[in-house]
View 1 (cartoon, rainbow, N blue to C red):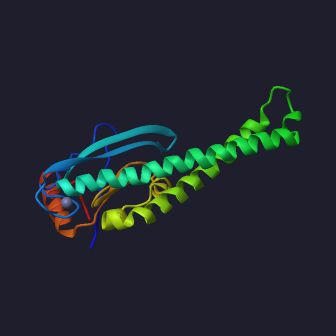
View 2 (cartoon, rainbow, N blue to C red; view 1 turned 90 degrees about the horizontal axis):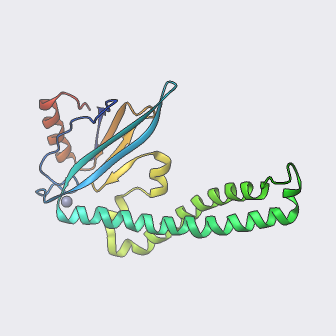
Length: 205
Ligand SMILES: [Zn+2]
């Protein structure tokens, strides 16, 4: 069972969080660390606030490796899909619209076709990235197994605005005042709760 905590994100610096010396993925003794990086430009009222925090998350060697592999297994096909599909649609749309005479409207130097092409390319690129990532995931599943299955898709992380390392998902709220931490491993979550209640009382269920 997974457990979720909400911790406050201060305006400056980062919330002091203590993690138990156990892998957040599988609960084995911690051997190394993976970095959970939170970087957001959030609107608080009318003010734009840059919120960043970096946490060293304890992992066993296996979960740390799977975090990196899963990240690459998502990022590489996603990037390839964005470049290929987005690029093709950009050129097709820009040339097509230009040939259709879109650039004959407005100011002579307006590159209407380029703007429209870029917009179409961006939308198509995201869709392409998503499709490539899904396809890669299906292909890689026999090798990467459960670790890959549990990780959210990059496209979903972009839409959902969350960050993931094996066993732990972090998601700031819209104004980035709070960080929602979801532990997949309930036993590690309980130790995290006990540690941080003792330290600062910052974490709450
Ligand atoms: Zn582990």
